[in-house]
Amino acid sequence: MSNNDSPIKSTGLHIGEAAPGCKKTDPMLIIDHVKKSFGGLTAVDVEHLEIPKNAITALIGPNGAGKTTLFNLLTGFDTPDTGEWAFLGTSLSGVPSYKVAQMGQVRTFQLTKALSLLTVLDNMKLGAKNQVGESIFRALFPRSWRKQDAEIELKAIELLKRFKLDTKQADFAASLSGGQRKLLEMARALMTDPVLVMLDEPMAGVNPALTQSLLGHVLDLKKEGMTVLFVEHDMHMVRHIADWVVVMAEGKVVAEGPPETVMNEQAVIDAYLGAHQDTDLGVVTGRISIIDQEKDK
Amino acid sequence: MDWGTIINNTLAGLLTPTTIAFALAALGLAMHFGFAGLLNFGIAGFMAIGAYGYAISVLTFGFPWWGGMIVGIIGSILFAILLGVPTLRLRGDYLAIVTIAAAEIVRLLFLTTAFTDVTGSADGLFGYNNAGGFTSANPFPPGSYGWGPWTYNSETLWVLTFGLGVLAVCVWFLWALMRSPWGRVIKGIREDEEAIRALGKNVFAYKLQALIIGGIFGGMGGIIYAAFANVSPGVYVTSITFFIWTSLLLGGAATIWGPVIGAVIFWTLQAFLSNILPELALAGILPVSGTQAATLRFVLVGIGLMLLVIYRPQGIFGDKRELTFVK
Image (cartoon, rainbow over all chains, first blue to last red; front, side, top):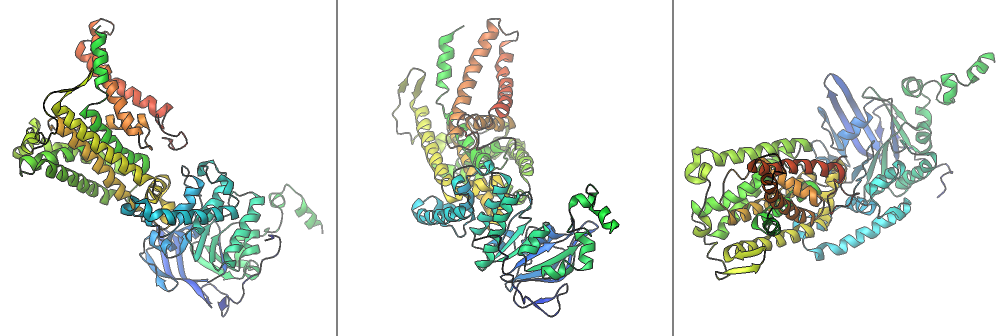
């Protein structure tokens, strides 16, 4: 697919006015009163939030807004002080992280977790669910798992081709570049056949050329019927691919809505984007003298 | 210097019941540390449980030898669960601290005079090989077997055959597990357990399984050692744990044959040093007494271990890419 075409945005996701905590027509994840504090600091305090199904939702906000903490809470990697949340109608409070993943909610990490001393192919094969040979007793009888393992391998190679990592399949993941590890982590997550993919800063540290293909992959997920929730600081990417944007600040949801409207809200601009979001960084730091030119006008 | 004796004793070290026992324990550590990344510094405790489990159930409860050995194995499984349940949820370093303390507790429990009737306290236990029928199960008629440095009486030959059989089964078992998808999950946990958890695997259950499997190997090592020598609390000290670590790192932690070959090299080297160092002292080359020279070999083991982890962390058989000791 061409990445330069403007992606088709999903609309009509919400019921009523697009305000923090508004109802969605078809929510996948419903969060209620989730609160988490570290000592005296309240990291997350979300009253109500719904994540729409089969859409790409971006979670943005300044550093320390609680985005990653919310991710950890939703995936069972951390436990909240209070609150509950449901995934496809099933309550996830107190459910351990591995069970959350088995239900089809898969996540990636802000600091990429490639399994360095395993081959790229083994990294991929680990992602597959319900493997017979992962039970210690059946593991001893290759006849019980060999066929399934071969099928998993085919699927893994196909995904690696899509992510252009197939030439690296015999290499250790440690030998991949930072961007390739991001791709591997995303591909590995897809091996679990997820319904909800949660990406924590998928573009951090990725060069512009790779960003293009990563964007394409994220859009493909939606095409294939998956729901995506991602944290990102790259506003161009958010505007380009997100159908819905949730803005967090100091642990709370301060705004949500379609990207065009939400990113023009004064509160969001003040809290996060900054007044010069569309100007060159050089202008902001004063190294380029456009500001002076503007004054002259 | 009597080079004939030195070489003879060194070569004899290649195949002894002790070598086999330590190869088994090193295999257990390979499962724990090399594949699953669990820092177990209490392998001596697993050996002690295996050995005492065997000896006590034969002497005190009248079990046959094979029943006693099964008790020893069950004991090491229980010990693994006891250690693992509270600690495997914590970070790796904590397991290291707990295992080293637990192994010491085990040793001191066997040493204390409170249970002298059962454990024999500082004297240890003996005579169980006869009482349990292990000696009379010997299929080899009395006599001398083998040649040169490898000449054994029928009793030693029986322990060697039995030990090699057990070792072969354990090596096969570890190989079969590590080539399977189960082994893939275990190696993944070594790399990053959070990533594995995010992929929907019950990391805690896998770690406990790995701890139990390695614990069984360690317990078997203790049993083989007990089948040859007496059971004495003085054997299962912390330094034994570090000898096993040295054997493992020498051969290569994340390999199947590494721990076995490492144990063989380690004990052969020990035999060589314990023979040559006193000779050197006698000949006036080393400025120490004979007994001091014999203990000097432990100093050399320590230096060797340090050099090994600094310059060749992957061991002799390890793939340099596979296991870098310092991450």
